[in-house]
Length: 81
Image 1 (cartoon, rainbow, N blue to C red):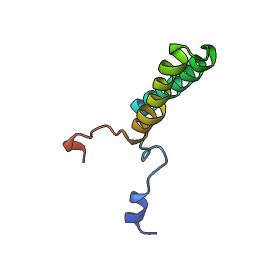
Image 2 (tube, one colour; image 1 turned 90 degrees about the vertical axis):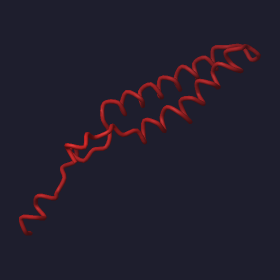
Image 3 (spheres, rainbow, N blue to C red; image 1 turned 180 degrees about the vertical axis):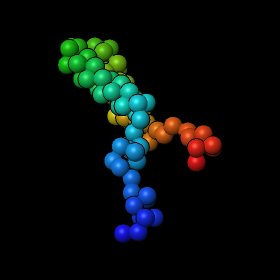
Image 4 (cartoon, rainbow, N blue to C red; image 1 turned 180 degrees about the horizontal axis):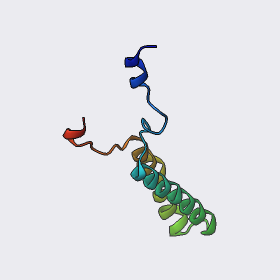
């Protein structure tokens, strides 16, 4: 192997795309899911929390927050490129 190829190797965490913000967003999404399922299970069949609040939390967790956590990237300053 030449010296050029050795410099191009990237260690696992140096090339890792997830940062602190991604993990925080993912945790908020999972908490949203857990709270949504808990509200759905705790409410009566025709209650506001079972029919409205829980599905909104589940939708937000599955469709908004967790995908946002997967695709979010922090902007890199132009000087560090």
